[in-house]
Image (cartoon, rainbow, N blue to C red):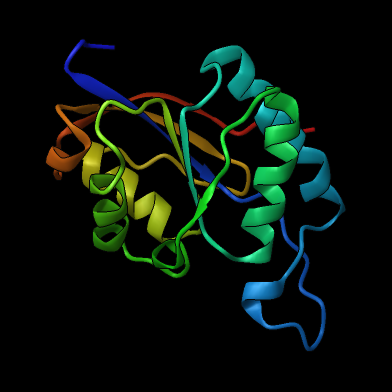
Length: 162
């Protein structure tokens, strides 16, 4: 990673259930999701280390994903649950990234598709398939506030499974 860049780790929530009568934002993880989320945490521990900041959608499935990921990281930071991340467009997610505290990294953003996939494409020009539990690791040039379309490099992509 270049000295003048910040590492952004974009994580799509693990696989969720679709229980009848449950509003979208309250949908929990299903069995596979509860198995895959810890695998995401193990991958992050080995490949990225401990994040310094976490911004997470307030939806139940993203909260549950982060809790299971954090269990694998040891001393994980407390997440910021940001309503802007739920059902967000790439542009809205870019605003969330720009609001990260400067000098803090690596930072993890946990959310939903299609916004996350669109954000990766907006920042890097690449289009990895952001399946559930997918991770895209980006190096963002300059400060968080300066994050811009085309201003990042996709350095790693994975979809860990439990």
